[in-house]
Image (cartoon, rainbow, N blue to C red; front, side, top):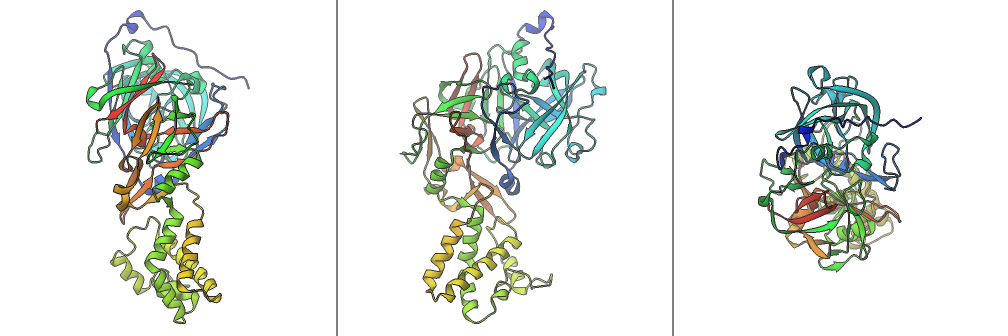
Length: 495
């Protein structure tokens, strides 16, 4: 099928090119992280995507926005209809749910654009689909005025979504996505909103800057300034590096150091994409594994297995050697339900009331499963007449070897003060991240859980290795996206 292209709405009258203001500010709100959403959040690599026009890019990576924290408000139409959107530097289209989205549950939980309410609306009607890790969103193109801060961008192309993937948008506090990337990765070559701001003369300087607050108690999550930067948001001067490939905001990073020790892989340079749509930092498995090993991070499955061993291992041992049948040991120690009954043992009730399950990032059924697994492992070793110490060394090793299917690694929240810094080399300068900056703290019903912000993403040469620098990095460093000079600048954030 021959590719359709959007008609380009360029016949603006002359006064639209006259600068009206030097900058446009948008305040950002911050959505708290949720452990289930964070565990499900992923960044994955795919090949070339058919609805992206930059075929020279060579790689498209997908995310699912389940872990997105920062969002702000815009308006579409005349009069303006309000929407909360993620300002995403790693995509380029603007989309919001349409009133014509009738059969997708997420649409009914968010604000929907109603074309009939707007006197400035024009329907284009070209259908489109945008792929995400958990599925697609699809809809059609339209044109209308968009309010950003105090200015009105006229005749802006956007997508009215008529079908949304169930996740992640069901639980999101935002309604849609506002892409801040280049036209090369824009579906159907739609003009990005920030491009339209420049073309219509709303901003004098062809740049925008991003500040994300690191203050967990602040109601203000951050701020985007189109056309300028706010001196209150950073300390010292910016270090500028060139954009190496337009499409994504892509730069080159050098060596990554863990407590001043080189990880080696990027010593001669790796590509890095700046992504305000994820809190994570994704990179080559070889380096991410080194980092997570150095900070004592482990997969949630291994962590929960070791927690059960630590809290209940000796009780399981003593119960087994006392002659209790193995199949009821976990019931006897209070970690499982009675077989064939929904009745919970009194000891389990006591454990729950005493909050001895505190710190578990998984549910009771998972703890029961780990218990039964550990009992089996101990049984095998007892039959081989191994000593108690040898048995638990064996069990600990098996816990360590369990796979980590979700890719997230967890650390002890009490050890943050002694963990090493992780430093990125950019423009021959060092940009260190402290443990407080690269660790994500997530509140659960039981306790606070600490999650490493580093996750694996493997892109083979010649495009790879590639890093994705998300909000863990961007909240530490105020960032200037300078289109006029095709460069990106970093300065220490004033958090």
